[in-house]
Image 1: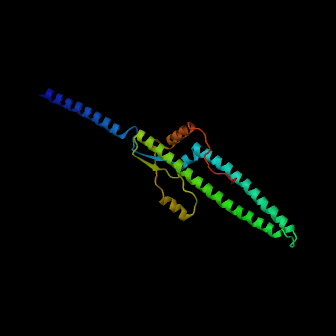
Image 2 (image 1 turned 45 degrees about the vertical axis):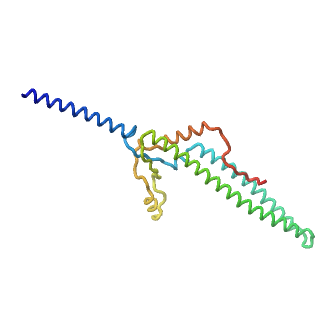
Length: 213
């Protein structure tokens, strides 16, 4: 009788162990390769360290330099004509024509500046949308592969400034208070974006020229 009792108890322990092992396996499969189904992403860091963004920033620097050179050229034309007008006699019959040339140069200068500002703003907005779309696509691909269901925006780690209203606004806008390193997808997403970008042929990204036809 006692032997039968011990045998029953031993069988119960074995069955419980097998059941626990099976449940643990199912749990691990359901959670994917990660221990958590929620991850985070530092979007600001990716925008800063993404190689496409770095190349785009360099293109913008070169375009801005061209714009400054063109602005100096146009400003120089206006200043030169102004000096000519200042030296002309009030009775000079070509004075009115010169004044009209001056006004036309000033008008062209103003319109050119507004057009360049609009073009650059459009290009920045366009590429910000495109790069953000690339970040979203890479994040979705990695999250699906790693078994994450939700990816949260990782905020700036430290509060900026000492103005009380600004500090409170930063606190109110926080989306994430803490995340462990194992659920931070920033580096994997950044690595994927840079690897994909390196495989693409290098082309001019900005469609803007300070030299108008």
